[in-house]
Length: 505
Image (cartoon, rainbow, N blue to C red; front, side, top):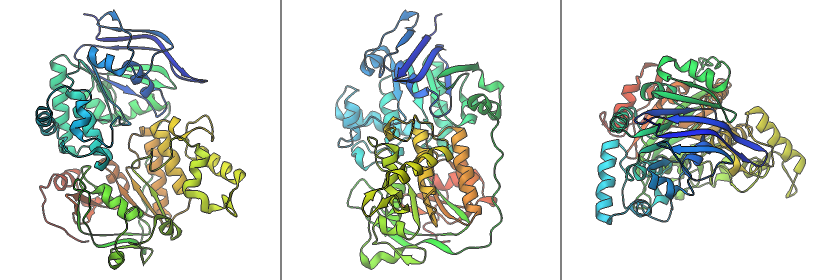
């Protein structure tokens, strides 16, 4: 039987950048096929060619042995190809069900029922009537996955599908994917979690620099072998966290409560935690349980009434009613989860994006931009954080998601903060870049920096953090010492099995 999808010598360029070069790929019927590669290796471009977003410059594609030419994603969906993008394609002013109606036919009541059913089956529950602008990044990804599944695809392309799931739901998703495979559906699976690829995939194609460098059965290789094939070098040894005496409290939440005006947002109830110099504190939880609201309250995007200003304290001062810029003057730096739009302006160059938060480092002179210093700052960030880009004048939106994340993380660290807050620091980042970011955070912690991390990657929190809280339904679990806590313990708090109410440290 012919392969479901075959590519032969497929190439795609953007100006002088060769994103894909003479790609050969075969996806069999009823297979789960991984695409591995660093950020910027060409994975996203290749998926866009398969989904009809872009047309190849050279080469041929075939579908079940017949020539395949896709003029648009709609043509791909008619062929039986569905895709969930890393960067979402949702209209923020529409509700979940209204977004799904754009590509799936049926009455609103029927679609609402299917959304809820698929949400229960996949552990991807989302309110069908919620407006997308009120959803977190993780919830938006759930909408994308559900919308794709509702088209009944023959080929399902999934880009980082487990990044929003607690451990208990990952295996449930995998069971569903295996059932789809057994019914003949083929799946292209993109993930930076190499153990997941070994658990679910029967083939893996490895890309490096836009070129196929290998085709393997991932079950025959351990994660270190796959990482080495993917990045072309050995992974660095994990930097240990040095024992640290208790430092000064740099961030403290004291009975923080918040009732949002948005009916779809999550209220927060009596949250208490502290972050001291020389420690990393993590917040785990399924997306949509209050992470976005908590991030906005800590960063200053949402201000508290003056009477409640002491509920958020930084460097010993109440800041609940202070603007983001005034909090930054105290030594606070922030990496938001939404890198395009909140972390960077897509249409501006990297040099201009440096100015967004680093202008206080002498990049402005009497209100005028010091072009030389700004360019030097940007070049140093690109160099020190291995940002793969044509240059400092490249638009932020032209970078791959992982490379833009490295730039934003690097920019904030270069501010030399006293308190660093990161939301989803390695979301969508390949294993090499994620390891580098985590190593840098541990080194900063060892040097005495106070760091707070919100992440849906539980393994990341265990690697980074001294203590972990779990956020569920707008409430925090007790502080859990990482050294004596199991991953399953965190998972139980995430799904409410350890419902002990709100607890302070």
